[in-house]
Image (cartoon, rainbow, N blue to C red; front, side, top):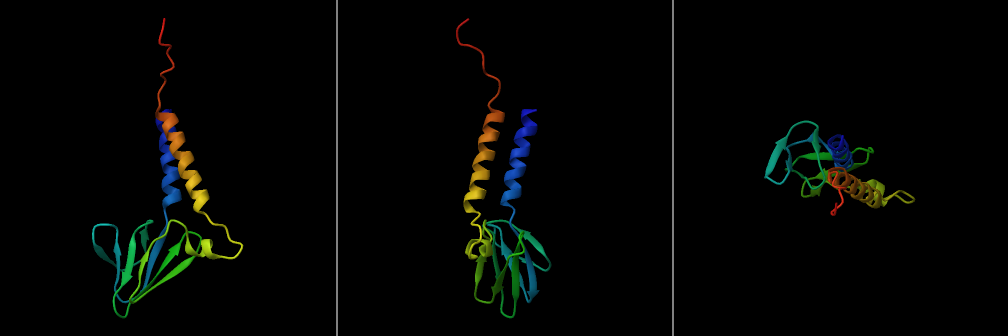
Length: 125
């Protein structure tokens, strides 16, 4: 049971961390996931920290889960954000940084509790 709970906690953290889709619109588009740039030709799932760039004549969009779109144009390099840039900059919008951070901390605490085991035996007889 404790393994099921810890798996669910990790799944929640992974879902919160999932970020966006790169949608190429023209030319060549590349994504770097920390091991060098790789060309992409169609919609590609990316995670926070991944880097997107396009070559001359190219363009793309990074589309976040809340439909926030960030343009990638020639000469720019876009780092996929953990918090959609539209949500963080919108007047009256919600800054999800604290919410996502709180969920991650709560998930980590829950996983630690679930994995702590049943060592409630007294030291003395």
